[in-house]
Image (cartoon, rainbow, N blue to C red; front, side, top):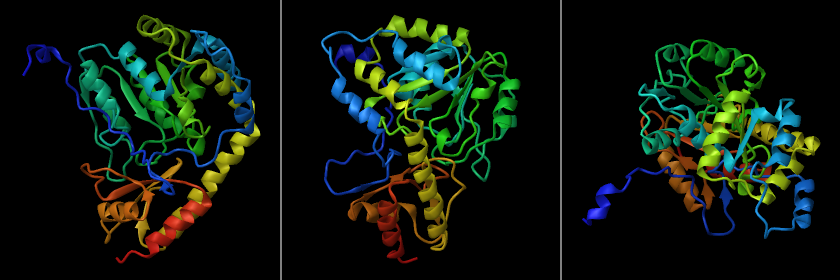
Length: 349
């Protein structure tokens, strides 16, 4: 081994859902929205110009639009290149003690990657037998807390009173609530941010706003939290948010009717599909997301995953303890889910 390799930072990277290069597939593995962005966003693309210039480093047009949409002060909004960027920046900013941060044992699998990368000690309290968070597990001394609500990949949402209970018991550390899927049926903790200056709520455009390809994420919290995050951001890279993202992200917030329409279509399809597969012997927790977490007592999840792939249907399989007999299935269009349903009917239990 070369001497210089002795000083390489070695980490096990996050593995995202597969992005197949083949055509004519049904892609239900990465929780993308099956519908396009608002027509206002599509039309606005034609007006983009001056790409030779650097974007506004503070992304003020987008920050102000998000603040106006959520009825908060602009100084309470932080934007980044997808919620992954926002969360990573929050980890760097707030998780710097020698105490272990806490996040669930079954959750978004980037959390432990960031912790390992940044040298942050951590512990993962186990979800209960029904895949729900046990709030009492977060009453202990810690260096910070992060969890998604609704959780992924389990799809389960907790009420805002549950979130507040955890924040109440942890006023001396930052509590991050990752609300990537909240628009599909969860209850947001944004109502608590003026009450608790240590609460940070993180959102994304990738799911409910159909803009995964444009990479927009944001956080809302107290002015003090946001200032600290911006200080770290501008010490790292001042031009993180490109001009098209700032302009198109702002435009998306102007079309509330389209946003609600597409979200409701996903919810309606989710409820229909959940009922249909239950009649085939599949079980899944009640979902508050744009995906379901399904299992079958007699048909192994890995077998379904592989056979579906052979039929050009991609779903997500996690070869991990406690969930290795579950599949995470993104809710596609009604037509896509009908095809997947017919595939499931063809399996022999």
